[in-house]
Image 1 (cartoon, rainbow over the protein chains, first blue to last red):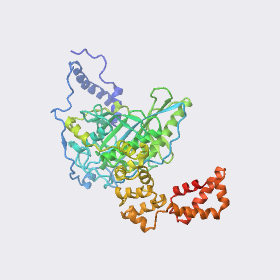
Image 2 (image 1 turned 90 degrees about the horizontal axis):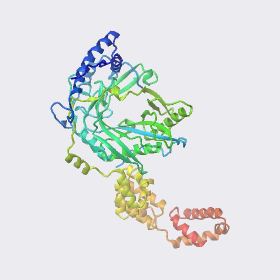
Image 3 (image 1 turned 180 degrees about the horizontal axis):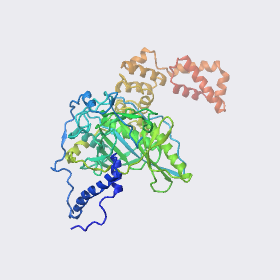
Image 4 (image 1 turned 90 degrees about the vertical axis):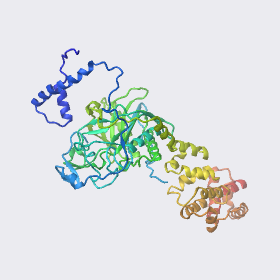
Length: 104
Length: 486
């Protein structure tokens, strides 16, 4: 069995960092809450570290399938008016989005 | 067949100070010219109306599922094998990042198990650049930044066209083996030639179907350390590859020499200003939170598939240069332009049909840049034979050649129609007698000991004969006659 982990599985800073990468605007309270909740998920995953997996290949596909491919044949796309009708904002037949941050 | 040749101006980049050494690795993205995108049946087409080649899969709508394009995988493996890579079983991975050009919030790529790895490319000058990996991934949508000066830092908003989202790419990552800006240009040019020979992409840098990012650092010469690198993006031509790298290297050197150091970041090449500008700080690999893509199966090529690919590879530029160099008795680098234009086969056929190799190469390099038109290899060989037999001067040959390209006629017919007849040595001898009689002073200066004067007067007599024969005399024959009388 696993030794009880004295360190928390996930730090508050890590949660804040991941939230920032995902552009999630979390309150301080939410960060506290998710640090506990995500931490327990990660602890559960850590249980697997106690298994002897020597010689076990990682599972890349649940059904063990390989090389599932399709023919390179064009199929109809969707009508643009329908596509753009789903967008919050449109200009010149393109999706209009706020200026993205952090990249040039 | 002619293709656009983007070699950039034939200039060498300003070198960096001797005590510093350049360390460059290149990441080249090549759009594979399949009919459809990587994971859906939308058309893979450049220049379509915005957002017309899109569907739930490439828009990343909930519930949609990707299915791999078999043709894209095959093109990727062909290019991998042409770059001497090992092709291994591979898996796709999600590269997570939040940016509007990828509506799924992740790019489907490959991470720790790429399709192609551990290959190499030899430049025409014989420098071997190792290739770390060549992995399959999807392209992103195209953003247009509106407002401000067009750069995102000042943009008011961005407009996104998802036609390009999901187009198959192969990203070819070199090892940091490149030591000069010219080597970097040669690598990109050769890679482009290989891609074109395989026909897996049109590799147009100006349309973005081939894109080059350069990882640039410098170190004191003699050291083997790897210092902080910057990734340079937005390089839009082969000549900019050289300029951007030379600029960035010198920026690093200036920083080190004033006691500062560069920081690891992405920078953008500004072609007009001739400098790089800072972009975002580079995200760590860890920040992309890669994990295996659960919606796609592993790719496991069979030995038979790989053998079939190897057997079907066309002759690549390096082999074409070697073959032409051997047949024509020239250096392989002298065959570069002909190979790039796709004329190596034509040149070899003309040589096989009896044409003198050196003259075939000279005419293809200098006089057939606009295409061979109606000229066939056999007709070309016929013309070259007349030239080497002294029946046509080089000026006449050029004129006849131009007409052969237009009309497809034979060299003999066109030469006859133009009144180009072999100028016999006897006839020239007579002319020369007359010239000497009329210009005794000039002749004395030609025959004298002053080499400069002699050379000048040789030009005078040759010019007089050319004038009298309307350029039909063979310059080499005239020179021989002059010297024999000296």
